[in-house]
Amino acid sequence: MAAAARKVAVVGVALSDCGRVDEATPYALHAQAARRALADSGLDRSVVDGLASAGLGILAPVEVAEYLGLRPTWVDSTAVGGSTWEVMAAHAAEAIAAGHANAVLLVYGSTARADIKAKRRTANLSFGARGPLQFEVPYGHTLISKYAMAARRHMHQYGTTPEQLAEVAVQARANAARNPDAMYRTPITVDEVLSGPMIADPFTKLHCCIRSDGGGAVLLAAEEYVADTAKTPVWILGSGTSVSHTTMSEWEDFTVSPAAVSGRLAFERAGVTPADIDLAEIYDAFTYMTLVTLEDLGFCAKGEGGAFVEKGRLTIDGDLPVNTDGGGLSACHPGMRGLFLLIEAVRQLRGEAGDRQVRKSGGRLPRLAVASGTGGWFCSSGTVILERG
Figure (cartoon, rainbow, N blue to C red):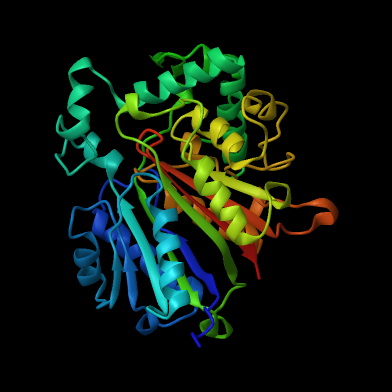
């Protein structure tokens, strides 16, 4: 008889220095985040036998392991854009549950902002005109224009308004105002979002994520390690992954993201429903991503996302707090932001979020959270359901 699968918990989380970090290297941010996450867990680094990393090239987990002084026997370098870390968390949880690893460290660091300011040439996410993309690149398609086209289709098909999209940015900034680590904290209005410089119709500047430096780390461990950890465990209840397209002409419906699949799988495997969720951390490189992902995860029906995000629903004190740290629109966005979603969800479930802490009726701490990352231009999705121990 096969051994029962082990339960898996997030036992340590941490951010590196974030925002404006002009002097550090990406490796230094990896190391800083890793040390902080291990300290947060209370576990010794000797228990770490798995490492997941991406963003530094094809040898990322090997180079990062060497830099950190680790010799893991399980590694993952899956790179599918912003959803990378939710996908890696799913892989790591499966490996730990099966006994292939005991404790897996997910770690990331990027100096995306500092590199641009210093005019440094670095490995980046520029997509060359090879393979399927060769048919779009000559026409000037940019990543933001792909998102803008999808947003415009949703507006045409369902009547979603620019004001409703702007509400996403306004409420993200309201959450960031309560986060001392957020890069931008000054409140903004719908009118200010709409009147900003146009970047790609319908997105003005404030519809778009910021660019920052920063990194983070998440440590997952098998249930038998939990007794030795320093903090309340946050259990991984279920996860799902999905891919959709790279060529826009191969995307069947611009109003449906791959979160419709990853979310359904995650909820089914967790044995919970969207109605059970206390807060959501959702990838928000652009305002439309938040709106359509909420639909696809099942928090509202398809086409009702515009009305759903109105009236402060997404704020810390709203019906469904979303991106409680301020998200990529206001807090930080150093590149593949999916790891930050997991970190913020864990901090909220532990009750460690300070002034931005979500409280439910009666002042209770949240019990269930969802983190859902999106990669590319709705090319990939990873969704993880988390529960406070």
